[in-house]
Image 1 (tube, one colour):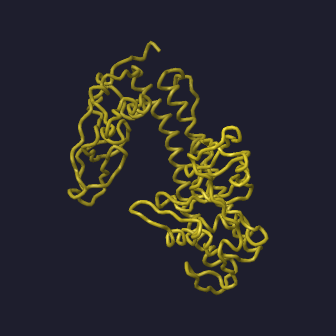
Image 2 (cartoon, rainbow, N blue to C red; image 1 turned 30 degrees about the horizontal axis):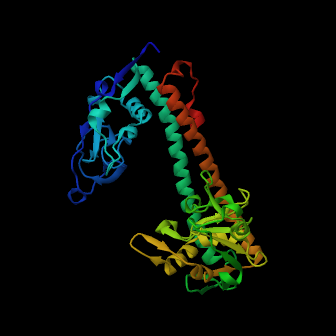
Image 3 (tube, helix red, strand yellow; image 1 turned 30 degrees about the vertical axis):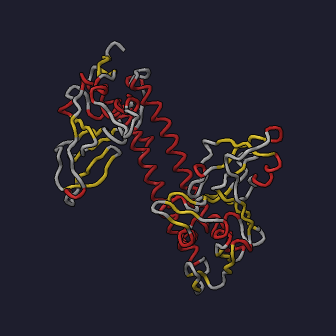
Length: 399
């Protein structure tokens, strides 16, 4: 690595302060306005008339963004253009700053902030030649574009899923006339019954209760953070100590539909199906476990119904709301007006939803693999453990 130089950030770049541009002063336009956490609006004229990097100064301090055209950095940010780092390729500098990770040196009292003088003291290793900088930047940007492409697929397919479920749970698949329910129009032949008529609703266990240490057991438990909209994220599970006799009452069973009782508006009633992914797992009191009578309704059909616009509309209509929060109680959940088409139609609707879910899962898997690759390459290339002249790389693989 003799052709790499170690310098302080202050030797290779200048951080400029962004300028105040409150919402009331902005004029509709196409120029992006950047805050510490990224684009926060638009304006009709740039305050910086060339591409540049934006670093969070307050709030999401240390975060770095890349504007590939003119932009407006507001006063919670620093910015850098090519003129402020004349000896370093700007795109390479973007990835270098991500590797250095200035979020490490932000203050933690009150609103996090990035001190410019402290940032200038950070050591940075850079290739001596621009061609090597540019090739490193090209490799990393290619992988990053591939990640962004998968993100777009996930977003587009998720929107398609919402539209599909709205159609399926209001029109069905048989083209039959509709009848009006308290929530929405539905096919005329479908039954509408309270959830308590076709499922058992189980509340979860609360933290902080006293337990007899001689008769207790520590078990993994499902929290609101694990329950996402249409899938379960079990990457970070915690444990809870309960009485041994309670493990059956609060234990999740294969086929349970887990639903969040509330939180932020977008967290209300979200969830999906528990398939016994973790042995002897219980659920917290902010997560309901709905155990359908499978002779009348499948777990999959109810799960998709609860995630559809029909289910969301019911949850919002009965929720207790404050300024930013909403929640439902057990009584309201048991009164959920469940739609019951024939078993065959339930199966067909589930099949259509599962098909689109498969596409979303595939895109998430590819995105996650690319993110792992990006993290590895960022470390290897920015520390010169892997040199670009020894790396075989084809853009086509990532298209």
